Length: 137
Image (cartoon, rainbow, N blue to C red; front, side, top):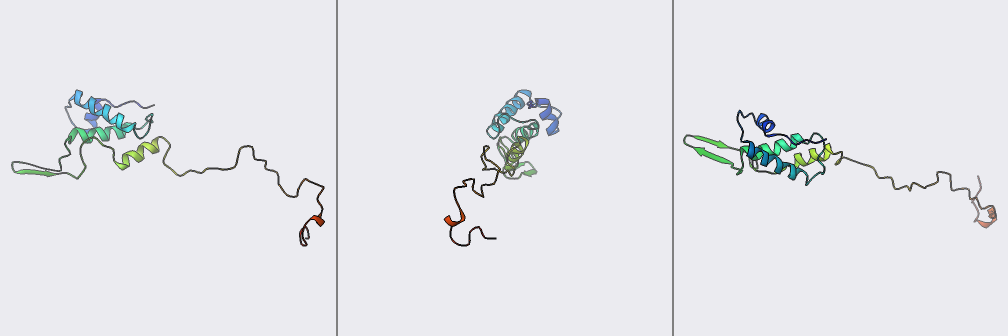
């Protein structure tokens, strides 16, 4: 059964000593809602995807790719912030829910009779009713 992560768990996930609980709770709730657009209800184990999604938004809410403060500059990968699900996140959610893999569809009706259909049960037919060659060994 899925249980939404707490603000404290998000802090541990991000390696932060302090975390704003109200902001973390909002991002976690938003991440849960976003994950539910892919799979509903969320399966057990989806906490990792929720933490990943909320963590991206917590540390880089404006999706800043390059930042310079004084002599320091930081360049982040494109798309490394904001609240969104990656293709991997969506695949993980589907996999946790037991979806997204290969499957087989059996088109045979459940009422199909496994007995052979030949020879015909109609005994009124004889070999003379067929063209030459039928029924010969």
